Length: 142
Image (cartoon, rainbow, N blue to C red; front, side, top):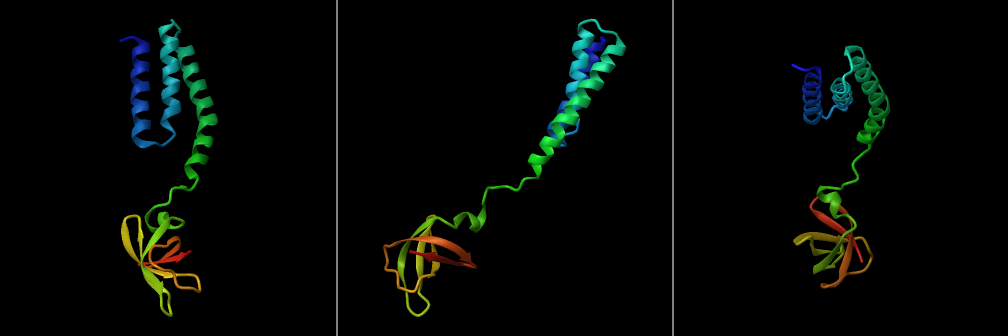
């Protein structure tokens, strides 16, 4: 079996391992093996193949991995669950009135129990903004 083919198989196996594990560790070695395969295909002996493998893997590992790790550690900016509802608008379907200014609003296609954060009643049909979700109750402001 030709040396370039062996290096190519190693590169593919390491690349597949990187894709499956997302470790940010096997990828540089896969690139190094690819470089060694190219060196072997161009007629390089074993020593240049190993040198290209080591240099490409080391440079890639030292340059790419710290940057990639920094990006993986950043918190997600995607809000999910009830946190995704904060800041959205809702329509009052049952007036927010009484001593506790409670009623109902339609939010994201569903009817929620609601409480107004303001001091005045809010009539049905008004558009309000969701300030927070308190249990199963939406706290809104007009």
